[in-house]
Image (tube, rainbow, N blue to C red; front, side):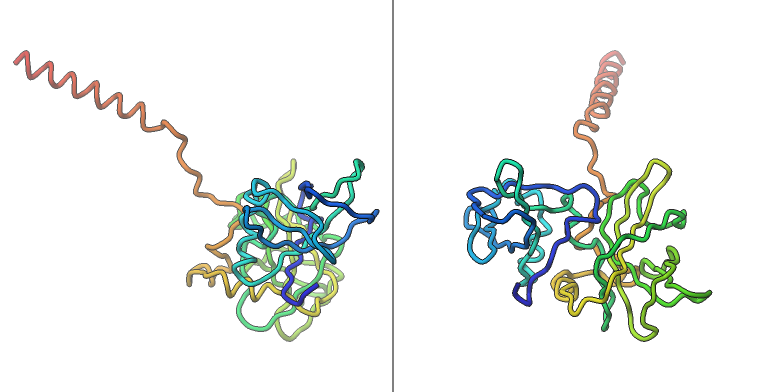
Length: 258
């Protein structure tokens, strides 16, 4: 894969979506990595050693975060998998989870790869994430101040301790995490694998502007998996308008009688 490739994981972030790769023909019988590029018709071209097929424009529209990668000069890479009917599918997480919802901090840092998750269930009650939100996040790890293992932080906020995880005492260590609701509350699954030789998170962050306040809180205003700003349901203004019209009619009648 080219050095500017950004690998999108499909495991570890909840349910896996399988997008049909139209026109694909392959002799592979197991999962393999492909790259994506824009097509003139609004879809995505899927390539391995050569062009395999394409993703429709409708399916691409479900994943606007892919355009952030293109604008950052990065090539999205993902996993393709043969299907029982001999077709080929592109495996992605739910829309909104392909990229972390927060940018990494400034300065040099080490990114850890994926590994079996370490689940934190006793999250702080005042954590600034909606309890029902599904979010792909970056957390900061530092040596524990109270013993072995590592402390995990979301920005300046301590979220839990990871036993059996060793991180460098110098510099900043980052790990991917997945926040999701559970029947008994919520969980933050942290993936603290081996350090990656390189990461394109910095290139993505450079192409994604943030406000000063979002930088301080380690959150971004540019690509957020969950938004709290839900639009008002259509038609909410109708009862108020009717009431105003009724009041205006009554006033007109009173003026006429007087």
